[in-house]
Image (cartoon, rainbow, N blue to C red):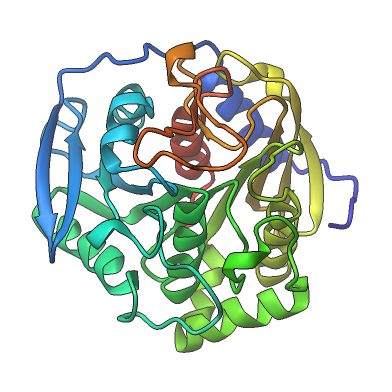
Length: 331
C-alpha cells in the first residue's frame, strides 16, 4: 500500500485514545457476565453478555474459530471476557456446522458466495437473530475470525457491509482464494477487490463507513502472510484508505508486542484500516493472555480437535479489536 505522511488532528486524537484505552494488560478472565450456549439452525454457539452492559445497548462481536478448532476453544482460551467487559460488547462464538467442509474449516473457498449459500446464511442469520434478542447497538456490529474463520469473516463482511461495521482478520486467506492457495496466494489484489465489491452488490455504498483490522505474523507457516498483505490492499482500495501513519505496538496491551503496525486513513482523514504484524505470533489467534498452555501450532493440523492455534504470547487482540472499532467507528 502507498505510504504517505499524515498528521491529521482527528487521527492523532484517535491514536492517543486507543493507546490510553489498551495500554496495560487487562485481566484475563474477570467479569460477572454470563456464558450461555445456543443453537441457530444447527450451528452451536457460545454467547457472553458482559455485566458492564446493565440494560444499555452494547456492541456485538461474532468471532469465528479456525480449522481444527471449535467455539469452545475460543471461549476457554481466546481471552474474550475482559475484552467484552471493557468494550461493553456481547461476544458470540459459533462452531462451524456439521464439522465443517474439511478438518473443521469454514467454507470460504472460491468467489461464488451469496448471502444464503454455504455457511454464509447461518453466520449472517445468527448475527441478525442476536440483534433482535439482545440489547445490541446496530451501529456496533462486528465480525472477526482466525484462519478459515478470518476468510469467512471477510466474505460476509463483503456480502453485508451494511450489517458489519467492522471486520477483524487474523491470518486468513483473502476473499476469492481456493483451498490450495494457503501456502502461496494466487489471486491478485485486483481480482480480490472486484470479488469483494461484486459480493456487496447494491450494498457497496456501505463500504464508506466500514472498518477493518488485520493481524498476522510474517513467519506464519500455515497461511502465507501475503494473504494479509493483499487483504490490506483490497480494503485500502475499496475504502480509499491510502494515507499511512505508524502504530506503536509497544503501547498496546498484551504479553508480546513485537513487530510493526500502521493505521490507514481515507481522504477525509478517517482511520479505516488497522494493520499489525505481530512477530512470534505464528499461525494462531492472538489472545494476549500470557497463558503458554494455550500455545499450540504444529506445521500442519493433524489431530482434530486438539490443535488449538491460540497464542497467549501476543498482543491482546480481542481487547484491541473492540477498542479500535469503537474509537474509529463511523456509524
